[in-house]
Length: 478
Ligand SMILES: [Zn+2]
Image 1 (spheres, rainbow, N blue to C red):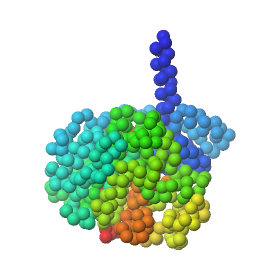
Image 2: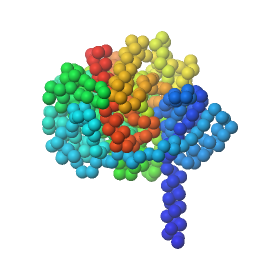
Image 3: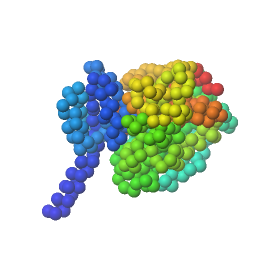
Image 4: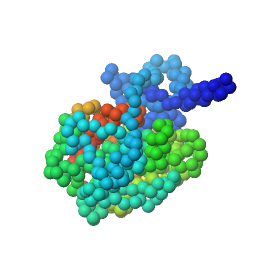
């Protein structure tokens, strides 16, 4: 009897910690501001408010039952805001591959764009398979792969690869990375299968087909010739843990700041050197990251304190002419462009992330105390490329995507996309200007896609990457 009681108490405790998909509805995005300013709630990559079919706004979150009960109590007398568990019964998530389908890098991956419509991939790559897949591309197509300088907390050697523009690393202009956030399953697969598609089509003289969207061989060759650098597994420790535990794990697995439970790990996407020290740079009323190790957005111990962040940054040094960067995340269904710390403005060059005069004022969306400077020509260019990307993703025929400024509802600090774009100004023009994007594929807070969704995500993102590259080429690579 005693054993049964202990077991059921443990089960109840596990249930209390279980994250429930929650939908918060309100008449406008402004209604969400108080809720999103609480840095203990999990809003996915970043809080994004989206319009509903009936003219309201919705915000998705992952909350424990206790958090949900608290919010329901707080807002019980506010009838404009409703908070409810998303009662959609989730089908079984796509399986994680067992073994190594690429046989230690001797078998090259083949994407969906070069296969007949309706073909599917049976499972998500495990950590070893991602590396093996890149090895397969090296063996079959002569892709160049290399080890990055820093080892992860759990001792993983990280790697990136490049293809399309020969041995001269100054000829590479496109950079894509995936799996910064561990639980966002399918990110590495989207990226690796896309590169595999480009190479297979290039070799056969054919084109690519993603649902209803097609590309010619000339377009494939043009994308490759732009020079592609890819870092498909930014957070291998986190992904290994997430795949073995099913714990919806987001951060890396460093125990420097906390040794157990949710206090383990740093959010790599709040660790980049862009307004990292948010308490200094942002208004005290906003929390673009968290200084608490138990938060999902814990920013680490210093800007770029994490080996994964350092490795990510090292790619810009090796490939000094990268112009376009895309970080692959899920799950919201959007393409986000700069900036992420506050609203954009193109009139006041002095109002910028470099100006100490605005410290303590940044991050309140919709006010005039601070807006981040972006040259109007840059803003036009990045919006154009984001629009082309989502148009291609919609044209596949699966679902709708939106492009929007990354600040959206709420600011972020230390994110990879803002870091990419900020480098040029932060280093006084001594380095190339990089346009940074975040793509959030998939469906709101659904980090573990079903097998059908996993395959649809590959089609959607691969069309998106192709048009992102083509639109970037049209704007300019130099
Ligand atoms: Zn993410």
